Length: 296
Ligand code: ATP
Image (cartoon, rainbow, N blue to C red):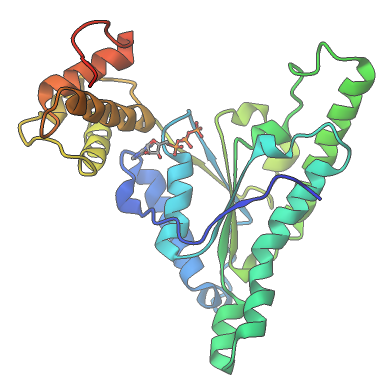
């Protein structure tokens, strides 16, 4: 039995209003939410939902966040695993995990089938949709040579073979995937160039969505989202940080606000001040200062 379990998030609680700076991608992904909310309608209209959706872009720009927001907006379970969790030297473990993951997402139908009472209820719930998400899919869909280079040839070959078996299982699941059932398969990667071409063939990942680093306006919107979760003084000029921190991703900006909150607590401020934000920028760019911040 596989030791890695998919993390199931009944309700991710994440919504599109928690995501900023990637408006184009969000607009494209709204369609998936409409589908997850009403797969029967799409089915009746003869509209085929995408088989798989690949989110690609640099780390920290919100790929996982937006995948969670899709499930959160639609109010459906979110099954998450990282590509590296499928990578095993032991024969058959990776492919068993792939099977498990898809089986668990589909199992919702069976469980619900047994507890339903009315016919109408049955129909709605049998089609209960879900989102399957595999982060860093490149870890399982490419041949990584680094780890096993030092090992014996036999071990290297076994690992390579195992990775291929796992990838094949994923292709089988994707091919046998009944898109009409309301299950959406999403994956994310920072390295689309490393992916096996078989995975990118039509009918597998039908939709590829680029998640780009935010521009100045996006950075401001992201800062506002994260500032709203902490006690930030109204006097802090967030737009100056958005303007002056080019290249900072959503993850880095979220970290900035958290760091500023910590600085404010250490300095016993009642809310985060501009000087706390400045300190936090310094700490994140040049590392913590030795002087200036007293603990306790
Ligand atoms: P990786 O490729 O490293 O997995 P990722 O693109 O999946 O990165 P996330 O894990 O979604 O990035 O981002 C980490 C955190 O950074 C999020 O939980 C969120 O707090 C913040 N964040 C990132 N992007 C955004 C965004 N576009 N809007 C708001 N917050 C963001």
